[in-house]
Amino acid sequence: MEQFQNLKKWLKMENDSLRMYNRPIRGIYSTKDIKNGSHILKIPSKYLIEKSRTQNKTLEKKLKNSNSDMAGHLFLESQKKNSFYKPYLDSMPTDLSDYLFFYKKDDLDLLKKTSLFSKSNYTFSEQYNDIKHDAKIVYDYLK
Picture (cartoon, rainbow, N blue to C red):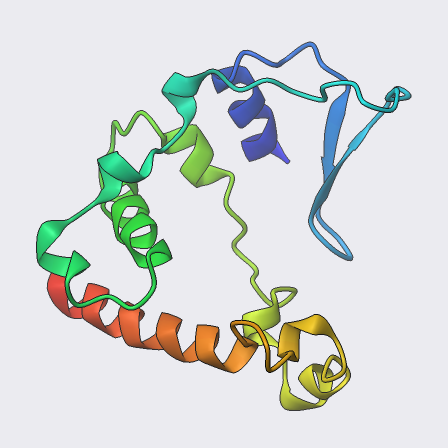
């Protein structure tokens, strides 16, 4: 929770009504009512990580998934002691067991009839395989 407070301080949002909980799932809630259609938060553009800043021409040709540019960039930023994005990076979860990519087969079977496994769209299996492929390329490159 301290990381979330540091993130809010970095974003200059200390006086808002947003709070974080970690279990049973990771999420954010408000201690005040939120009117329908109202803005919950506003993040200045200097805090956004744009694709143009993350592109690595050497890796770009080999990667299947454009999200891998972002993953590689975030990894490199995480290695810098004074990274501008440190509060953001520190707020990332350390326990990934609640994330779909780490579900056991029995749990995934419960989702078979959902749009996640639809044959007409980019399927979970395709995405999972692309991410594994790209992770190996990024790992080899960063070594």
